[in-house]
Length: 301
Image (cartoon, rainbow, N blue to C red):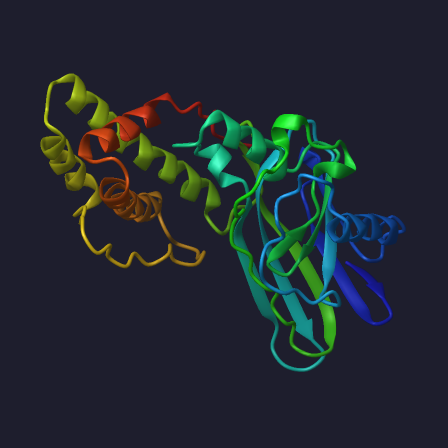
C-alpha cells in the first residue's frame, strides 16, 4: 500500500497476466490520465456516442493498462473506500466491457467488427476506472479502421459513479476478473463472473440445439417452442412480462443459478422475436443460427 498526503492507495492487479493498475502515486499517472481524459473530451470521427450518466471527475480514479498481447473483452473490479470516520464501504462492478463478444449470439459480422474495436481493450491500451465506469478507448494505440467506424445508433447503458463517504483515509481497487477475448480468464473472481458468462453461453447453446434438432426432425415451430419452454419456462407472446435484471454480484451463487438467470432472459428474448420479428418460423431460424456462433475457448488461468 502506498501513501501520499495522508491518503493510502492499494492496487490489487494482475501483472503476471500483463494487466496492471497505475495509482495516483505513480510518476506515470498524471500523463496517462490526462491523455485518457483528452481523448474522452475530443473523440475521433466515427466514435460511438458517449454513454449517459454523470461521473465525478474528483472521484478516486486509477488507470488500467493492458500490457498483455491479447485484447481484454471484459473486466470486473471492486472498490473499497475507508473514510476517516465511519465504516468502510465497497462497490463492485460485475462486468465492464464486451461480454457480447464472448457470447456473440445473434451478432452479425458488421457488429462484431465494431464491438471488436470499441468494446475491448486492445494490447497496449489504457482505461481510467472511476467508480462504475471505464473511460477511454483504443485510439491511444491505433485509430479505427473503416469497418470499425460507428455510423449511428446507441451503444449501451451508462451509470454514474458512487460517491465515496466523505474524507477518505484509504482507497483500494481490486481487479476481480479479466476476461481476455480468446476466452482465458484471470483473477480471484469473488464475483463469479467466469461462471456467469460461461453459464450464459451454455444456456444459449442448449436452446439453439433444441431449435436446430427440432427443425431437422421436421417438428413444427409450436412443438419446438414447447421443448424450449421445458428449459426456459413459459415464452409469453403478447404484452411482454417484466423480466427482472440479473441479481447483483454476490458470493455463493452457483453456475446453475446463473444458467437459470440466462434461460429466463432467453425466454423473454424469444417472446420478443416472435411478437416483433417475422413470426414463429423466422424465430426458429434465428435460434438455429446461434449454433454457428464462433465461441472462444473458455479457460481459467
